[in-house]
Length: 278
Image (tube, rainbow, N blue to C red; front, side, top):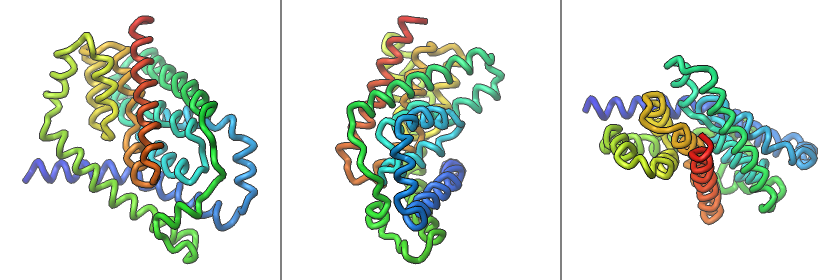
């Protein structure tokens, strides 16, 4: 019972951190739909080329709030696939706080952040060059979520936030429970037991939509258990709960799988290249 309560508490804390990001995102979307008409849409279209750069930059901010917010923005076509991918790849989740709290050298922190930013930027622009970007369609998003948008911007944003928060809490609790049952030691043994394939192992571990994976990867790197290339592969793949939100709000599951597959492939290849360089 004590372990269950701990998992419950951890899930509540993790999801609570996301609520401000989600609410502001949905508030912005509702404001765009109700107040600005096509003006903001035209503004976004004119500045579409710099969006992946902004995504790669904002994704570096600790925690995974921007990745979860970006998933909804992508679903309503406010941002492009390349911008979403840039956010996913640059998202650091718990990595930065752990590095700082362990007094990691500034050079190490900057090196990891630089890799994440450069890879996110390049992969984002590459994805946009091969993908089509549809016009903003927040109305369809609201219809799928069955929100009463005519009741006002604030109420509609609250409804959106509440629905996603409840769903996120349930899934986060389930994932945390499974990972707790599996055990962090078992995952550590999986990585350390196969050092020759640690890049692929870490990149797959990073795909787990939980802060636990970023914590484990960062800790193993600080302890000297995994290489710089391996930790980068894992942290590039780790988009926090962003991918969970994407599958919740975007009905095009085939497209979701393409995005997830692309993120993992970029993370894995980047890890292999870093293995050769460092």
